[in-house]
Length: 115
Image 1 (cartoon, one colour):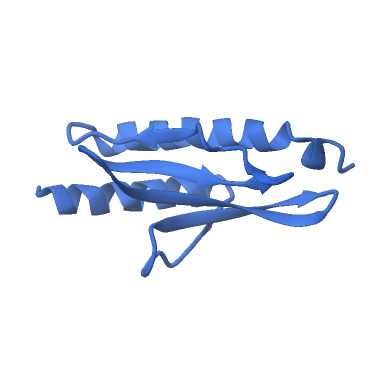
Image 2 (image 1 turned 180 degrees about the vertical axis):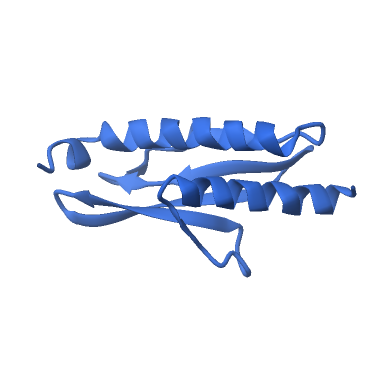
């Protein structure tokens, strides 16, 4: 399998995993965005956007953006894939990444105090 085929396989696994966790797939045709998830906050709906893009020497890096109170609280959150990874390992890594994202977002004042 070529590197491009592997990246495409990983992208598919990532999207399917995130969708299974309640995210909505983006078309990703013109960007590296793969999925998004909307959260209700004190200020109204806010969207988290997940990206899977080439990153230095790894096939791709899964990262996300969620801006609250003027900053992206997910800048330190990411999951990097390796050419030697199996689709199952990518799925496990994606689930762990999504759980970390969820925890950070649910811990923000705008979401936590929304009730």
